[in-house]
Length: 382
Image (cartoon, rainbow, N blue to C red; front, top):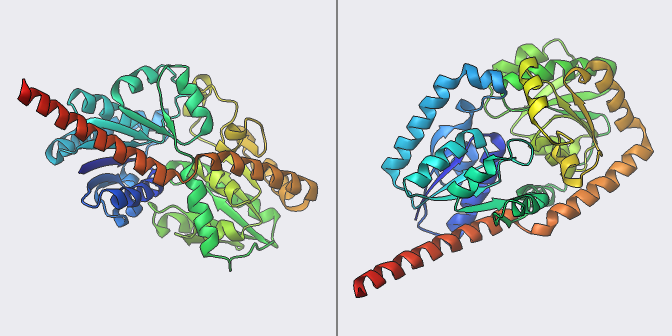
């Protein structure tokens, strides 16, 4: 069968790559075309657009790039039309994917969503469009199933794909041990968010001269982008394509909000969550977003277990104080270790997410094929 998969961020590329591998185990003749990144391409898909060309964060930034976004939408529709897939699979990235899903449903394509848009955070009314335009929804957060049930939209919880990814990585690298003097910096993947957060994170290194601070560089950003930012700080270095080895060895971490907060927690690293964005975008988001927390860690357990420093609160003084607490307060570290254990227990209830998602998609496609065959036979008898 032919599958067209659309992911627009680094995390979508990771989960898309694992999904593609699992799909190919079940559908050995699968022909897959994708928007994503290196990992999806390495898994066997033909890469159409890299996510580094697609990621625009914040209301102001989106408005400034509207012409590019509309060009990408038109190109995607044309590419899908020429490829003629049996199904289109959307991975998160809602601003783009929900528009394509509406168009695709109107054109008669089968539509599948893996990793739900965070409609529970804001724009709940988008559920109506999702229900109309998405044939099958696979969710990865346990509370999402109950959320969609309120809208009379049956979805399937398949577990969180990061659990299996990180468990496999830990098992494959038993030699990597924590370094009590190593601090990980995860400033995000988009250029504009890195420029907002990383300079503040780097200034904190001046208060901890005996520690090594290591920046995890984003796959879509070149070394030359980071070099002038890191230059003035003697105890700071950077690594590329080594975020997981870095987290395996880190004593603590400063992490931008998003999937990285959950990755850090699943590696058991004490963390402080950071967010700072364009001021206008932040003020708009603050009025619209309904959730109590910005980190997935706190959202999943539904309580504050990792500190969140947002906008003006994300400053050198506050970051330094929280990092000092994470490094030197033993009771706080022990409590966080217990909270992380509870988090893993919650997320492991779904099992192997990539395998379950692929199995569900494959069965869904087979059912559609049987229905189509049955319909043709009935028409033939008529």
